[in-house]
Amino acid sequence: MHLSTITDVTTPIVSKRLDELLDKFISDLDIKQNSKNLYRRTLDIYFNWISNNGYLLSDVTRTEILQYKEYLLTSRKSSLTTGSYITSLRRFYEWTEANKYYPNISRGVKTPKRLQEFKKMPLLPSQVTELLNYFSKKNLRDYAIISLLVRTGLRTIELTRADIGDITFKGSQRVLMVQGKGRDEKDNYVILTDKAYKVISDYLVTRVNAINTEPLFISYSNNNKGERLDTRTISYIAKEGLKAIGLNNKLFTAHSLRHTAIVNSRRGGATLEQAQTFARHSNPATTQIYDKIFRDEDRLKNSAELLLDNIY
Image 1 (cartoon, one colour):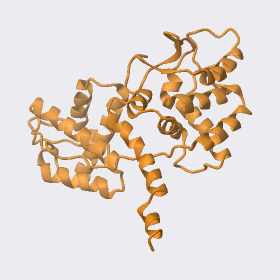
Image 2 (cartoon, helix red, strand yellow):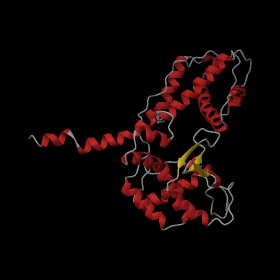
Image 3 (cartoon, rainbow, N blue to C red):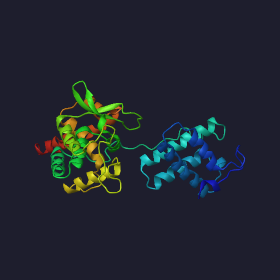
Image 4 (cartoon, rainbow, N blue to C red):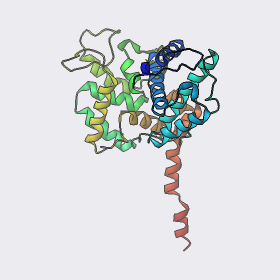
């Protein structure tokens, strides 16, 4: 049911349509359009749940909010997804209270706790070598893309935003300027080692007369030839290679290559602080999640169970 069919004549806003209320809430948000779209989508689900259960918005109390939370969890939505829905709800009711429409009945409703762990699996160093060998026999663009992902830990969206002119120097180090997650400017960077840059340089040689303002990686398809690659295409390229080396599993995707770079930097001797800077994590707790793999490795190699076998 579309929100425009839902009205609530008992509220302080006489006959105010809920879709108009939602429009006003969305327009007041000082966030990016993608985030606005997320708020609209999640609140649309909430309003339809209200309607399907025969409530008016003015009927809803904290009890119903908790019922809605339980509904989300029993609908087999992940704790992360449920958490985003509850966050939208809390922000909406904070706004309705501030604007004297409805009291904030969502205050104190907690988002579900979720286990901090990998959603995608990293590759072992031997698997990275196999993946790079596979792409070295394909076209230079795809080889450069995969090499850059596993050597810098870039996110796919960051890769799509890169232009040729973003390759520059900081002191004596060649770097690629990066527009990171949630950022409006290219105000961070990754270091391009000789190995990382060599493959990119070989690829750019094939881009005759390319200029600095052009995308670093462009499409080869007939429909959008020469245009900036999108994340979907990069994901497809990565998945093709992962399947080719026997990692045909939903746990291995393009995002696995970011995990791979971070985890293997620690395997190579990087400190936790160095890994955090490398990954461009604002919170060190995020980087610490990656250390779980080392705890698991130690658990498997030096287990108490094996020690018991030496006793009896």
